[in-house]
Image 1 (cartoon, rainbow, N blue to C red):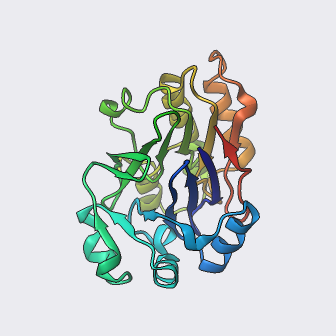
Image 2 (tube, rainbow, N blue to C red):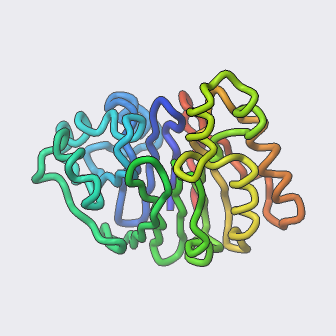
Length: 253
């Protein structure tokens, strides 16, 4: 399995995932030309994508979807809760409605419900050897998902904000409450505690995603998550912070 976060943050999100027989994008919140350029750097032809998964319909996750789907005629896989919004920008012939478990070639994909202010979903992707948990844009992670997300190869997980920076910052009170609430975003400390309960001996990489530009820094996210994992045997050198304007390294497991 090969994984690269092409962009992550409030201005656009996009992740590339490849197995032996499938190539997909998760979310398309950046423009076609940037995606094409980034994929070419890792010798991937954008015309060979097998599908696009959409987590939810906020602009930073679907802003580039129309151009990619139309120019490449790529199938878009969504839950029915997203259909009314997605059909406005993607030809219905290219939309595949999915259940909570489905496959794309050799990818087995299981959906988990996120808790956000619109219907939103995370993904567990398994190729029979390695596995990925992808979860951003959620105010909390339901405990019923702790077991099924345990001991995966790679985690791409939201580490949106530092609670102190958020509450002492200049956001209006109502926005602070939205971010920190059950339908908002995960803090660094929450994410670290979740990971401490779920990562295991099969876990090779953690990628911290969707960092706030106003209420977090890459250094702070890394520090706080590492602190929560201090007594865990995980190799902390393999914690990566995804950025808005720069792709992560290509992760291979």
